[in-house]
Every structure is written in structure tokens, then in C-alpha cells.
Length: 286
Image (cartoon, rainbow, N blue to C red; front, side):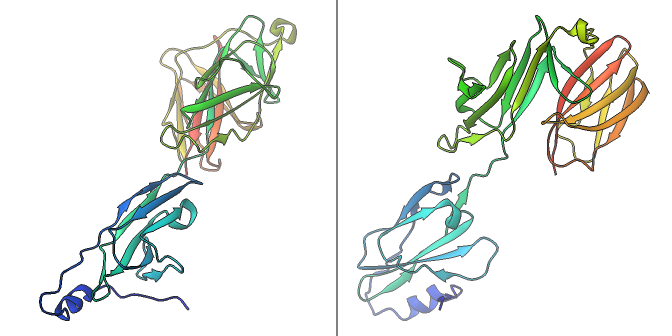
């Protein structure tokens, strides 16, 4: 059976019951107060004769005894201890006291995603096409260190930055970790497939548009697309896998697009005009 401890008024009752001249113990807790995902940490208190550790989850009123936690230090894992308060009960053989609560928090990260910029085209089937002589850039978001880019499953030498310049076809992938938790390596959830083609042979218009504004980014339920000079004829929205999610006829310099039906994640919007096309990335945040 779990032992529940009611802390309110405990110290006052305890102090009132102390023998005359007895020393107050004043236990405190120190140690790791921020845990990375899938990591461990340690907290400790001063030296006493006996110890018992307790835990209260954030938002709960119940303080629960931690079975077997009877040492001066407590080893924690992120799954069970993030977002909780710790208390240690100590004794010197005569007096027993509770420490103040010690908050243990944890880092949480969104999955990494990649933004794509540069000269490229998304065809009607959602495939990313790089025309001969053009360059696109993959920019990894959500990771800062231990970045590894691969092409067709092979690590790309000397590519450890969050931006990768792409001029050749392949199936690209990337992994990395946030700087505050360098051991927490996350992999991109999709493969970034690029095809290099003779675009004139495919009938793809290589004329490019620039200066399109797409906001807010991240968006929740509405996205605005605007160009200060040119009329936007239509827009296409694809997800990260290249699947076409929405097509709209615009024929004006600005339009609002409802995106509330889209799931959270990264998307690409292809903006068409009579002077060329431009591809921008945006994020849906729920």
C-alpha cells in the first residue's frame, strides 16, 4: 500500500514535540533539477542516520513514499521523475524531520523537421525536382549538435551543420540533438527524396518568383500568402512526404488560407504566378 504523507502542519507539530535543547536538523535537497529525455540524474541531502524519500507529482496533492529509497542520495530517471517534487525525511536517531520540496523538471522537445529553400520544383505528384545546375538547401530545425546527414543511407563527409547544400539526386536523411541535451539524438521521421532532371525536357517552368510572404509561421488555423508586386495565380500545399494536401485558385496579390484541418507538422507551399513560382515552408502548430 502506498504511504501518503500530509505535510501541512507537520513541521510545527514536530518542533513542538522536540526535547528541550534538541538540535533542529533542517534537511535540504540539492542536485539535478532538469532532466533530459531518456536520461538520469541524482539528488542528495546532508549526512544523517536515516533517510526516506517521497515524491509528489506536479498537479497532485498526494505525497507518496518511494519504495526502497532509503539512502542519502536518490537516482532518478526522466520518465518517472520529471515534473515532480521530491521530499526527504531524515532522522538522527532522536529527531525526524521533512525537507522542503525540491522541484525536478524535464526538457521536452518537438520532433525535428527540415525546411527546404533554394531553386527546386515540386511536380504535380509532390516530388521534389532539382533542375540541372540548380541548388536547394535543407535546414534542420530542432537540433544543434551531433548532426549527421546521409544520402542513400551513407553519411555525407564533413556535413555536421544544420544546413545542407544539395545539388545531386538521392534519398536524404538527418539526425541530431538539442544542445542542452546532446545525448538525446532524434532522427527525422521522413526521407527527403530529390530527383535531378532536365526541366526543359519535362516542360517545367524554371522561372522563379521571389519575395512571397507566408505568415504567421508557425500557423494554427489560418495562413496568409502575399506578394507585394505580382498576382498570385494559385497555390499548392504539400506535406513533408510530398503528398498534395490542398490547391487553391487565387488570382490576386494576397489570400488567406484555412489550414485548421492540417495536422501539426511541416508543409511546403508552392506559389504560382505568371512570372514564375516560389516554394516556401511553414509549420502547423496545434
